[in-house]
Length: 401
Image (cartoon, rainbow, N blue to C red):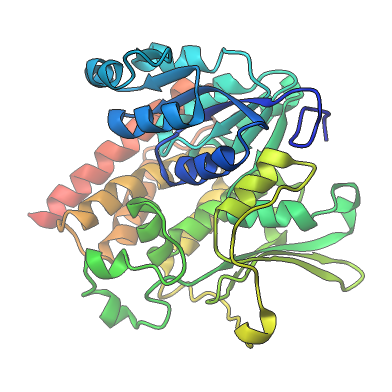
């Protein structure tokens, strides 16, 4: 790992920029920073359009800058922060300018493809990037990792499963690793038949048994597409072959990731399902910081269960694995189609099983059209993203008709 300022160093606080400050990751991160005010200097907080939440967080964390992507909310944010001394800016250019500010650590937690360009721009020599945005690796993994290698920046995975694997993955022993296993809760429909899933409502799908997350990621967990995305991310994060990546359904969400070594050792990271644990690991790495999460009592827990994923009942996971093997173009199309299809399901325009059906149809159409070539730039990623969204919207309209 590269050297850098971490929690516990006596010289000065870690300067931090947070992209996606008002989302669920940003809120958990803010809780940890507020508990350790002498350890962090919050340079900038960036959000999409929630001016009230951003202003409240900026004041609480004593941020220097507060930035909104939506320029229509600029006046509202300015009013909230009037007299605080916190600098206010808005618009896409302001978001890009925020990552140019001096900081040792940048948290990439903007949801969706919108996070790709600013997170890529944040990668600079000597910096740490704590990554929670899936699209950076799902849609542009090769470009993103090439940028990391070129700059020598340090990448820390913040998602719970990837962070768990990172904690037990012995990088200098990568050649001794047989398998990397990501665990999945199975979501609220783990035991449902295909016929039962055909009639589930958005409210049922949003009722995740273990985690509190945003609406899209909760639906993706219900279809198991989220686990597919995580496998794609892992293929870029860790030096293993695709066939060394596996998924194991583990309903208790106690074990978050495992690494199997050639000597038969199976190393696992366990913890309560609380995002503050992986966030804290990234904030303080390579040290540890105190986090007020529930401690595991294995005797009280009693039993941990496991099962193989059912790709017939959860075809979204199969589609993700196929996209990973096809490359970044297929993965980017998969992500875009999924986002549009999930939104259509949440608004009641299509059924739950229509989500993977729409994605499969769009991927097949793009493949037939010969659009699955390699990306050369972020602009090409975003162009493909728009094309896949358009085709998915067309499929949904024809389905509704």
